[in-house]
Image (cartoon, rainbow, N blue to C red; front, side, top):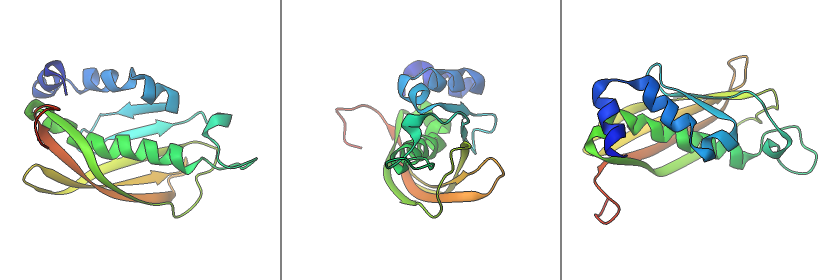
Length: 152
């Protein structure tokens, strides 16, 4: 992330980090609101489902591409605590779309399960508004990436 992101993380200013993510156009277009109240377990809420969120032709379920995009962001945010080391990014993601995500909205929580060197192994779960799990994902987040020109 940028130097300012690393500085905000070093200062523990999670509200400002949260705001930086919530102002991103991609995050806003997904209808996602990032919550870093607990930076060790980032949460993302999509409360207002629009027609463009829905999958297939006339289905009342959230499209898997939307769900996957939100999961990628939230799982990747398990690396935000290490932004003072450099950039971070999801480098592997496996998603099990176990149950449909209804059009009533959903939220995602993510957490790191272990760390080996600059790799965070993480998991994310999508829940319906009643707290019932719908989708599970695992992945690897690379931390400490210094710049695009250097190898990750």
